[in-house]
Image 1 (cartoon, rainbow, N blue to C red):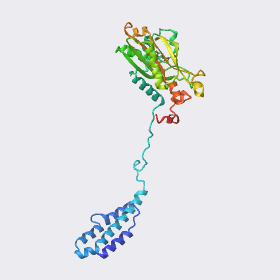
Image 2: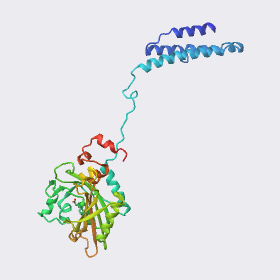
Image 3: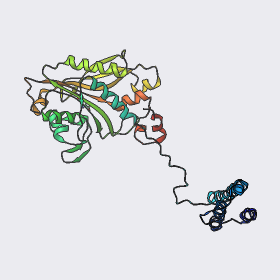
Image 4: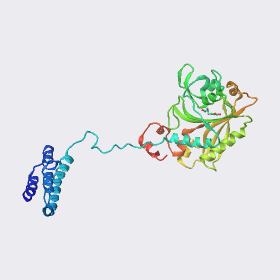
Length: 335
Ligand code: DAH
């Protein structure tokens, strides 16, 4: 027993393991079932009680030593080697979390306010025909009112919608009355691009058609929205205006003042920021959509999202919303 133990210890210590092949030879010689260490244990089994007591401990020491030599070699050889299949040894992929776009966040906040007032959310196509974008909305053919909105035409009588009011028409044509909906979406106009205007922007349209809807319902709905969105003490004003599809028509401004530089800029020095157009739906429009004007009336409004987003987040240049600069967008990761 003694000689065998010593010889295994010596041999295992002398064994040069500098390659993976040698490591495997070592394993085959000492550590497999028929290897030297196991052979020693087989012989140990045949010893009588006294002898077992004598050698048991040493045998375990041998086993541990041999295993330690192997483990040591293994960690050196495998740890230092490029075993990568290209994946397993690389650090995990770090994929950055995206964030919500500030325009989407503003649209969502507006949507939630109107949903609380009982408005549903509807959408419509961005490529629109003349009927839905203009004619049904009481823009007569060749009428200068069409020049109010510089249009990107895609084909004859087909254009990128210039406002979300086109979705009003689609909803009214469906004829499921009463209607109490908002219609958020992107709109397009052929305008010079600058810090304050872009060739596309975003609107939230609103439409309420029912029996006995009045202008005071419109005002109350919009006051409520402004108080919820901008705060309870926000000063507002209605200005008479003109839209072909509403009669009477108005625009609504909120008062920001001119103290801060950005308020001054956004309001062009007046302190007032126009946030929406609105009015009572013109009876011609209702008739174009086959709604009985003796029974039904309604109001509509169109909110501009982008300028409100500029105001909310203190963004000076509208273009920064849309040029996908990660440094800009990273500021909104918590939205
Ligand atoms: N469509 C108008 C625009 O883009 C905004 C608007 C005004 C929408 C009055 C309406 C409305 O629904 O009633 O300038």
